[in-house]
Image 1: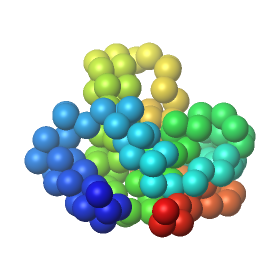
Image 2: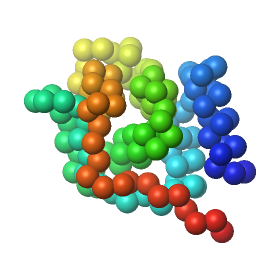
Image 3: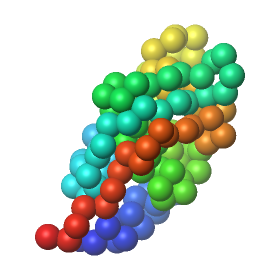
Image 4: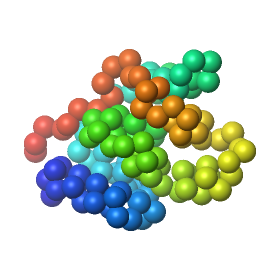
Length: 125
């Protein structure tokens, strides 16, 4: 399947049935189509910003890089985190786990900055 076809299917699901999206399937899609380079990224504005050093929170790095690359909305991006977002975060609003998801809910794309590109489309095989 081509990247554009897989992406169009994903976008359709994000629009029509976002609760069906699972973190693992997004990571699998990313890993199958992109070369990943661990990079430092910041998520959030001001004192609340979450700073992720290169090599840490690589799942969040992949999701945010993929979503930014494909201009996903804030809500679409959050659903890419699957049950981490829907169950762990939304069902437990006072918890402090999943800091990247919680911070992104507050500041959205205005707070996400990568020090270097994290994803590059793999060469066709």
